[in-house]
Image 1 (tube, rainbow, N blue to C red):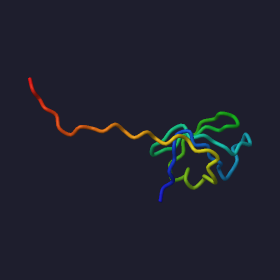
Image 2 (image 1 turned 180 degrees about the horizontal axis):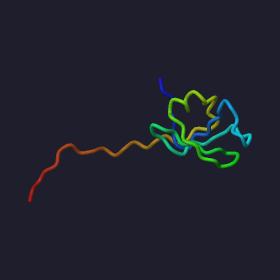
Image 3 (image 1 turned 30 degrees about the vertical axis):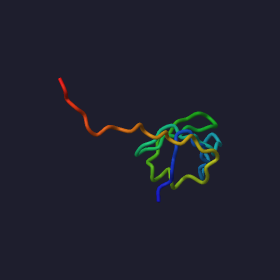
Image 4 (image 1 turned 120 degrees about the vertical axis):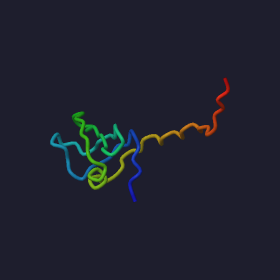
Length: 79
């Protein structure tokens, strides 16, 4: 089952960044996950699968995504 990842999540990865930081914040979601090092500010894109394997723990969770507004399925085309 895939991890629930949110924008703004702060995660601890298994290996340190060369700057010595272990904690990263999620800045982009999609097929690739964008993360920013909290130690030096460096941004990295990781494939979702690699990201899920490297996450050791969630330090702080971001806000859940808002529910999308309801869509109407029928439209009238009156002149």
